[in-house]
Image (cartoon, rainbow, N blue to C red; front, side):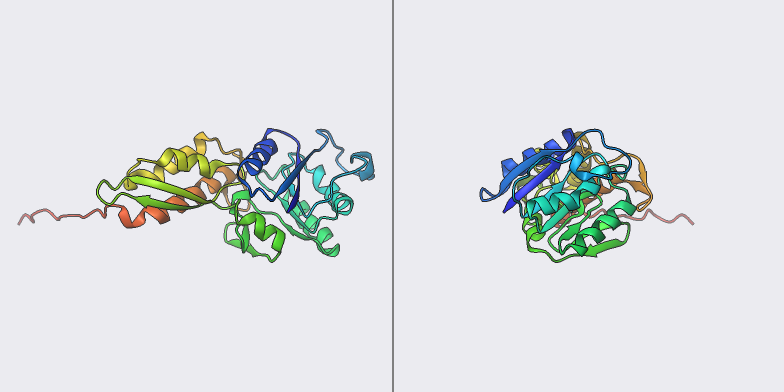
Length: 253
């Protein structure tokens, strides 16, 4: 699969580095660094695009500027891409109205587009757009990407005697690499403590999703992302956690 990643800063660079390090060897990943300054309205996209971009199957937009979304239809035409993943880890970079327009523009071009919010909500079947708003999609290129990167998924083995985590396989990493970091640091942690530890490790990585309150969740995207990480670990260690019991005291007449 030929992938073009669009970045504009350290947020996107970290994603690209992780994809190149741990994605399938058959993937060919190119990078275009978008202009750091763009006008509020882009009338002539060609003024901000290079003369040529590599032919691609999938475009990953990790840009930290809302103006890049307006360039994506032209980038699709230049590259021949058939699918686009436009991350929303900060609504200032891709507001919901512009994301809706982008999906419409690309749909009219016959190009699949998903806008996962946060990026680590992406799976092979759906992505999230807010609390209780799960969007299904069907595209082979995005599915292939989401097999490896998106919503964290683990296969955790717990020692039945010590109830400590003995081995962890990362079945799907977060695009930024956070799930792999969490897995490396959970080895030896007791099942009872694993969920909380996963949440702390997520913040220590650190997650770069927005810390402002997002209107679609009523929470920060960093917190939403952290909950997804905790849930993925909690599901795996649940059979090994102690079930607290309460012994009632003696009744006093």
